[in-house]
Image 1 (cartoon, rainbow, N blue to C red):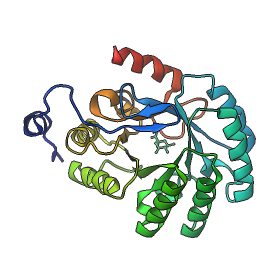
Image 2: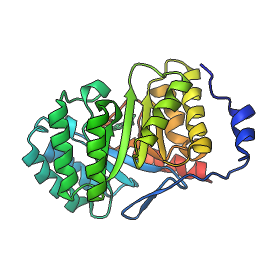
Image 3: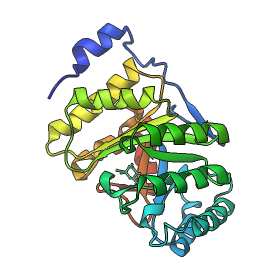
Image 4: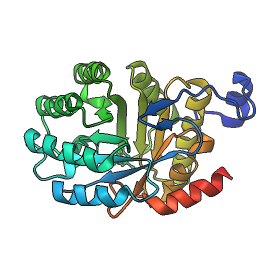
Length: 272
Ligand SMILES: O=C1C[C@@](O)(C(=O)O)C[C@@H](O)[C@@H]1O
């Protein structure tokens, strides 16, 4: 543990003492991600009827964007039905950005899916014109992720390369390497969610996030320390350099999520 030295090296070596960073931003519809208050993303879970009803309600909250967790839909494998729901979702959301996510079992989600179906579902949604962002799991491998990154680019869909560890928090060096590899793969946003076992794990994730902001600011980062212990990582993104925070509406999609309205209030207060 402890590969990242916050006070001593990062600030001095980078010559970036103070608030300056060259963090890039990503604009999705009217939403600028990567500057100011972290954007609040509300996951939508369950079957099509539940997702559409929740979308209608979430639209009236302070959410900035929504994540559609298709892996929580028992009929997710029917691509035709998913496209129909995507269209209805688009109509409800209007200009609110929509992130499409298949969170697979390997990464803590609900769907055991072959690489072939993973690609087919994502390709269909990318081509549909109904989604704005797509989550691509980094560990699905180079050919899967490169193919999807390419298709998304062609269709103007923005990409979130993601990596999750629901068991532990890897050491700082490994987390930096993972984030840098995802950055080099060419995603628009990169996301790392890990589980803390102790207080130091939370601090380590925050330090890693900070190091990315100072040393590797070319891609906006989303970082999460999950569970109750990691709450600070869902609130302190403006300082540490995490540009999106996931907040629950009625159902949390991961341990430790804070409700959307509570998040809105606290983020506003922290922003001052
Ligand atoms: O990757 C993430 C982050 C998350 O796991 C969280 O901890 O808030 C929630 C997921 O829905 C999302 O896809």
